[in-house]
Image (cartoon, rainbow over all chains, first blue to last red; front, top):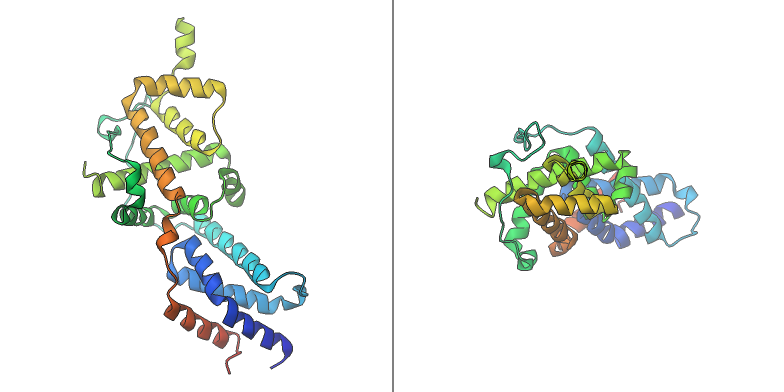
Length: 184
Length: 89
């Protein structure tokens, strides 16, 4: 093994867990997280020449991983997988007023729900059911802790469009929570 | 007065988008007035706003903090990466 190989090998040993943690945290999907970490090391190996030891190796690897994660969201957004559910109901009538059966009712949603594991689990299941386009936006915003402005930049959409899509995503999540948690 | 009423009127469609804008970047003074005026009269949008903020807060409160690294998965992952890079012993 040459020096590069020895270095990369030691990096795999030392940093895989931290990279995987980050990837899992941001994608919430084991298989995707594994692929992203693997791709990160492949990219690091190929572009080792450009590393030059200027920064801490972990920082360098994390920055490669972050790019991979953004690319993943971008791909997911551009090539949405069709999911079965989601005939998107019409929420509003022609005047833009709530359809009676869609009008939001009162939920008993106090702060204690934030610490309720079952509720969090229900919410995560609802997120997983979102159509991919809106899923990308919600993940990018909340799992990556991006501001709305950054989400717009990453996905190349206008703010107005972003708020509209966020509303669509929230409408979907509301419907799902209504059925599966608030039982209305 | 009539003219004022018309300019202040929002549809629920527009109002719910303003709710998302409010959560994201905040509203201009006019928008703020319009939305407050609307949610004061419309229970549907007022509830939507509560739910939307609630979902926002829940998601922001690090839903994934509960996730813990599975060390078995990590060790398998290391092996497979080393194989891919042809760096196995």
